[in-house]
Length: 237
Image (cartoon, rainbow, N blue to C red; front, side, top):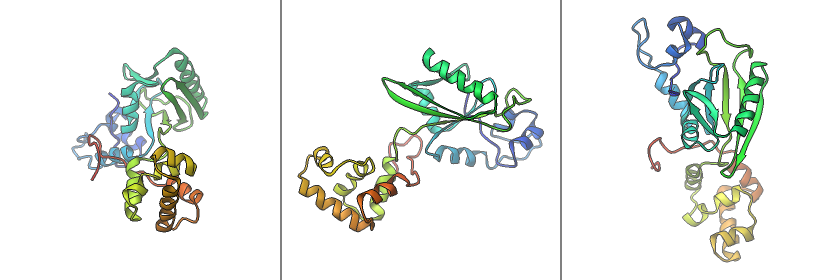
């Protein structure tokens, strides 16, 4: 399983001291001393809201925790998968890259890996947790694996941005294209409307958002904080 949950009180080292192992400390429920872990669910929910896939692994690549986006990636098995509870690549070619990156982690070095194929590309950033030396406990958090984003911004985030600025439905529909830096001609072709219509809509968007130019608006859109749909729901209301 890779859905262990972090205790909300103190550090992982404190939790280890109290429970005897990191795996036990990361599990939700009741402490050995009888006290309830009130914040474990909150912390897991916070990790699920982060707009990047996050996987915490042990020194042997055992998956200790994966947030919602990481679980989706692992479940889809585009490039990564979990095999007997451990992080693994789907193909031998990608497996060699992942193993090399994990070896760098044992040297205390950060690394970036790009896995590409017919389904696109997935970039991984591997970050050692602690000094980089192998931890004393086999189930101790050893490295953080961050997964690259598939999209620059969640569609739900753009919809909320459009709403707070009073954009019409047609104007909101242009935001993804603006964020990708498409030309007016490309937007018109994509939306199947006349150039003059797109220019009018873009002018209205700039006026309502107060953006001096489309370049400024693009920078704003790409830097918006994420609003992700609730887990298990097709859309949030």
